[in-house]
Length: 361
Image (cartoon, rainbow, N blue to C red; front, side, top):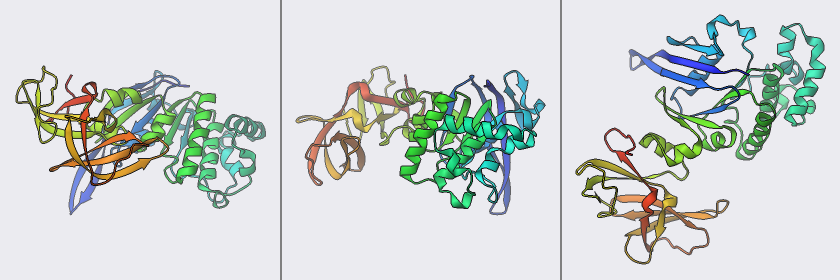
């Protein structure tokens, strides 16, 4: 295993748009230390720099500035064959004319260690527990998407890696196979605790597979922490809006002597330490709103969406030009077109500076 350290890493690419060439910074002055054995998820929207960040760690891209270290050794001082990296890509990246066994054994073949292959395949099959032997005699065109990724993971594992890098490996799988693949990979990571970086845009995957999550936007990490830390104490509006399903409701208004002034929830008591007149965005997650018989805010029910597996239903509500969502128990009878009254839990409100997006307090 390895401790990975990045110091002030930056990487830009040149793009031409409408005849004008400009530099786009894919990774922007990132500093990070990934401790030995930790599984880190990189979560963010498409185009935010996640895959470029992964390629910089692997040494497949050279940074414009900054350095990458494996333990205490600079990455550029380590030959590629000695880096001990196992990578799993979105498309599997298997040779189309090779059987799975040859793909899994590529590393040993390059090292002139073919005699170790049979025993190593047995070890990998035992660790993964995914019926690997049956897949090794087939070429990629005869494998399903999930099976291609199983062989890809086995190939990475056969290298006896110090570092695992996953670049959205399950993005092309259907929902059922993706869920099964997550379970199998989680079991593998528990049995084989290698320092790992897992890139995804799917927070369900990040929650299921990683110990810490780095939320990325425009080449920078907005916040790093456990999912619970990101959910309960987001650093800014971007993190708060990106983490959590259903999405957080946002209400814009002003603070005024300890009261809220906005289109909805006007007069609501809020934190008294907020500066009078300050432009404040109030963030309330759907599960932190509750129905009340009296008081609260009246709102029209526009839509009712059941989430049977989670045992709740989601209400889309409207009051004037303001719209928001709240979750209620699955067995509660609520009809479209009816009016309900709701109010937030006092300790369930997050406050943000509207101009900067920074969380207040």
